[in-house]
Length: 292
Ligand SMILES: NC(=O)c1ccc[n+]([C@@H]2O[C@H](COP(=O)([O-])OP(=O)(O)OC[C@H]3O[C@@H](n4cnc5c(N)ncnc54)[C@H](OP(=O)(O)O)[C@@H]3O)[C@@H](O)[C@H]2O)c1
Image (cartoon, rainbow, N blue to C red; front, side, top):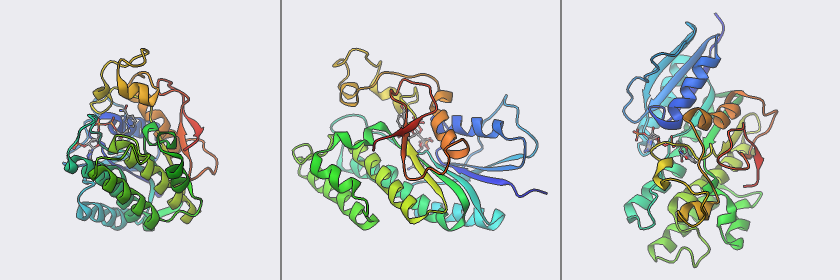
């Protein structure tokens, strides 16, 4: 029997993650093993989809704030298949309100940046040559929201993970002192967490030239995370986050799955270490390379 394509998707139980799973399993007629990871580890409900017999879907437990669960899933995939072809780091969270607690700020950085990086590092040793890692980020992580001195540090070509950790710790300190914007940081922790994820993507791509490692913005999608911004404006100023991010609302979960899916199984040539998005977060296109 052919060696199956082995894929792992985090945050697969709902939102964009579930839509990516649904689209992926319907694309394959040959052997595919999908570890559909979620915090609860419960089965993915794909009722009504037509799925080929060669496609196997296994529920898996993974919490981005529980290193034991990350290591356990990597060990399980190694034991059961000895390799991984596709890792889609979709899970993430957004405390949309401006005044969040220190614990919520820390959780944002721990989940969107450190936890996601931990998953990458746990799976890197078992990624097959030319395997793909997709980090679902956000246009909120683009460096245009950061002061010029911070942009230079984030984009440094030889930035190390240690330096990146220091940058994130520096953000936490200025946020503790309630002076992040004066120091050139964006007002919300989510922006820093996703900028750090993008920078980590670049570093891992540089360090692992045998893999294709990219990050993307899925667009503005009507999930519980995306809907926090309310009815989005074409009216700039109605919703301050939309003004800040210069965005307008896009459509379905399936549209949100398009760019991550392209980076996981579609045509991207040998591109690695780049940020992909559409010109507008309302666009339903398949994404293109954009500036960090
Ligand atoms: N929706 C948008 O407009 C939009 C825009 C830009 C980027 N994104 C990004 O797209 C990704 C998916 O977002 P979404 O819109 O689908 O959000 P969502 O519907 O809120 O789903 C978030 C997923 O992440 C999981 N998750 C949260 N914290 C976790 C943790 N500590 N450990 C493991 N899993 C965790 C959630 O699991 P539970 O069900 O257990 O909570 C859920 O499966 C995120 O990375 C988000 O930043 C979304």
